[in-house]
Length: 118
Image (cartoon, rainbow, N blue to C red; front, side, top):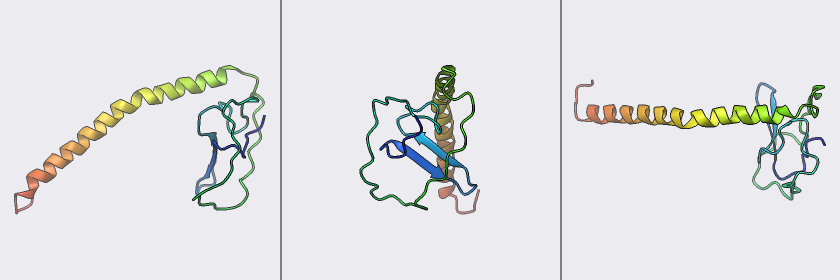
């Protein structure tokens, strides 16, 4: 089944470069942007678009689906594995960023009392 643009969980975003991302916010459409699961348990019809900013009334057309869409069950497994790799790296990256910010904050506090710069 094609992506259900009338689903509450469907998201579409077009970037200035012209690239468009179409996805399921619940990560239930592993073959996005081409297909939603035929009997999606979380399908809910979108009732209203409250407080959204729309660029145009028409979503750009979805590119033609590759021949392999819907035939290879390993697509979802591959995407899940890639997502797990990203999720596993996230906490380590967050720790590095937090440590860097804490170090910058310590330096800024040290410089505060010295009136002659560094």
